[in-house]
Figure 1 (cartoon, rainbow, N blue to C red):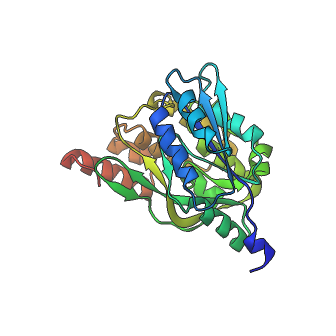
Figure 2: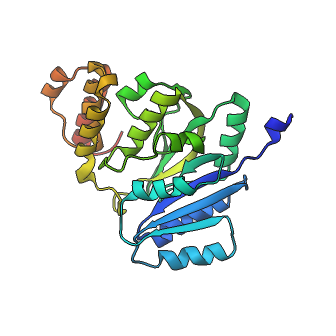
Length: 285
């Protein structure tokens, strides 16, 4: 291999957290256990009132890669993420939510793929997990274009990207009450071109219904509205039709048959059909 292939750039992992000391400990451990070791771990404690500070201080004693920031009062997850991005030293950066975790090879796979394909903007498939089941996201692999992102968030909730690119776009828009990650990926693709989605499923998303959330579902509709307003010059009627159903699906709001007439598409027909079948049989497809 040449020098480029064997290089091990510093990778920053940012983790926002709020009153989830046990969960954030598990998230941090999943980063510490990565096969790729040249990382820095920046945690921003968003005004926690539990023992988060003490838990992270104890972990920091044995790992000087950990950097701890704290907001004295809660400012929101995206504000916390932006604080981490501002001080990141890594050539590349990626995020982790405090109730999720990485599989051991995640960062190594990102770095290897970035070097092999000469790409600096990547995402992966994901694994959704609760107490009863574990389910992989549909295994699409390839470029995620701006047109694709107009229909739904094909990227997911995290990317691997040059830190300079993340900073140049201003990080997360804290004025969004929801859909903040979708908005940021959309803006990054608009500025830099397609994101490449890898086949790997190395990010585990906790989907337990009883977990506490930093962002509440009540803000989801407002986030959808802000997204379509902010990006209206790039969104077609077909995009808007799809996003209307995406919002209702995200909020688990019942979709009426007549709405398909006003917002027609094959994907929307599938969403409506699945919702009705779930309601009829009382289980998830």
